[in-house]
Picture 1: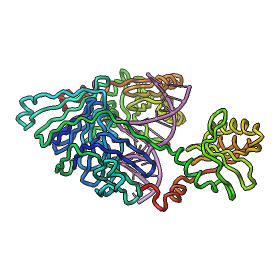
Picture 2: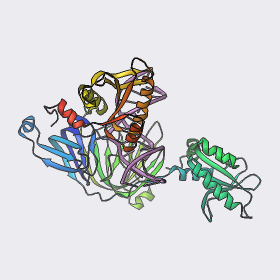
Picture 3: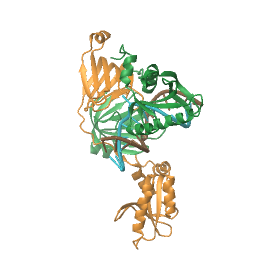
Picture 4: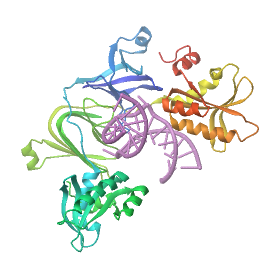
Length: 231
Length: 231
DNA sequence: CGCTAGATTTCGCCA
DNA sequence: TGGCGAAGTCTAGCG
């Protein structure tokens, strides 16, 4: 990665035309040739950029540009789309290159995983007297998100989704069918829990005797995090 | 703006939880306190970030972290939402600060607006003998991009898009349905004009008797702008 | 100030 | 690989 702080103007011609007047900016050249033009504010979005795959060609200014004070021009082209980004550099204030290597990438703790953890901790959200048996309860056709017991000790299988769609109801139905054949577990009732449950999914679930539970993620997180669990 | 290249790991807790394993990355601290964590690839989107308004606090690692090799910790908090970004720095490879000043900002030449202007000027692109009635012709359900007349004086409604998708065809269909109920206008034919028309959209449009017109933006701009404003 | 629609959106999933 | 939907979306216009 190469970092250049320079007084420059920028022109983009591609899906639209855009122009950045002369100012001091950060030019970030990534190892794939892509270029980001950042100002010292705003959001994470650059003022202008070129996405990979693209190629950077550094050239001399023509006489007109040289007269105007341009010392070098960067031309970034996207081979496929023909998009073009032209940076006219007037003064370089900083220039450094760095070897970063390949990034292992972001690990997102998906909302579903987090919801599962939170619901396991707040199992009473299923109803008074409910107790957790275990998360990821294994069955022959895959893990049930949460297995619990209700106030009478009867088994409750919970399928968790961020968005409750018909697929999730079908999935839970299969688990319930299987688990209800196991005399150690039966009778097993089902709870379909999600931040948002689609009307079709709710209709299908209730038709099959599966209870629907809409979860308030923020509230659950707030409860869990009131004492500052993470840091 | 402060630029730091460092071996670091990053944790984010806010609307979601995310973790970046130890690797060398660019940390960009903008003058509004916001932080961007960039890798040497990908798109313009940072691996992780904190949007302004937020505050950066640099602190010492605790003993556990120090044992693990952490030399300093950055804690960026968003006062309003409570979002938190924690950067654990293991080694600083580069550190520089730069005064950039306020950026004058991007000047965009919008494409759809520009296309509309260009097509209005080059209305004969619709076909020989076509004449412009007006741009943004108002109807009860919104403005039609361009209303024209064909060589026989019959009304032509034009829907303009940068990329022609099914939505645009639906939109034009609604306009046509409405306008064809107006005896002053009927019969109104439709033209779906875009720089690029998706096959599905073309099929739908032609099935409804709507003509498709692919526009060559560069050629249109070239005609309009023969003196070459940009390059 | 909240809502809405567009974005040079980008990103990820799934068919 | 293309289409579709979500995003820690961001951003600008408008009521």
